[in-house]
Amino acid sequence: MKKLKILVPLAIVVAFFVSLAMAQEQFEFMPKGGSMLLLEVLDSSSTDDIVSVVTAKRTQEEWEAYFTDQESALKDLTEKEVKTLVAYLAINMPIPEEEIPKETEKIDWVTFLPSDGWLLTLETCMNCHGLDAALIEERELVGWGTLFGGHDHVILPLTKQQWATLEYYLAINMPIPEEDIPEEMWGAPPSY
Image 1 (cartoon, rainbow, N blue to C red):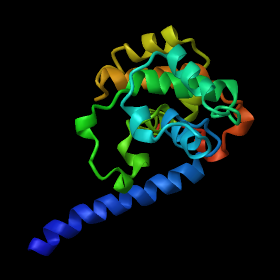
Image 2: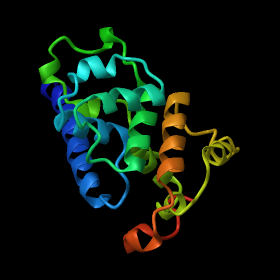
Image 3: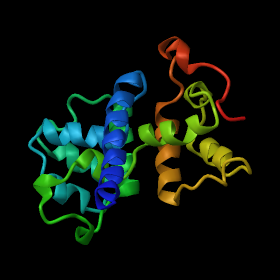
């Protein structure tokens, strides 16, 4: 019985990581989210270590200035990717230092960081809609906020931080050209 109690949670964790890796490949056509971009920037530049970045509180403008001051940290990012990154950081950081495990080299930052707009779009929107419903919408930030404040969205179990992350991601990155969305992503919602 003890083995079963250990194996079931372990199987769930393994399944989560496998499905996350598969999702990243299947949804490559979607713009990257803030956590993905952060890990890329930190991996490819001389930026401070990740702990000092994720424990800092800055506005979007301050985050952009911070990375601009780093030796070519943003050089490979598009304008939309920079906006996505700094919005994600301004909304989701800082992470309190006491919540970060002491052995930081053992942290899987992909799963430790707060969910970004890419992941929230997949986890939230696809529960009720064909993915194309969110991806072809063109709305300003206020428009996404108004849509999500409607009666059919307020029942979703997202925090204010997650809603803000999703709204900024969609306002910055949508719409995606229809021809870029794979055919299997079009269609009726799975659960109406």
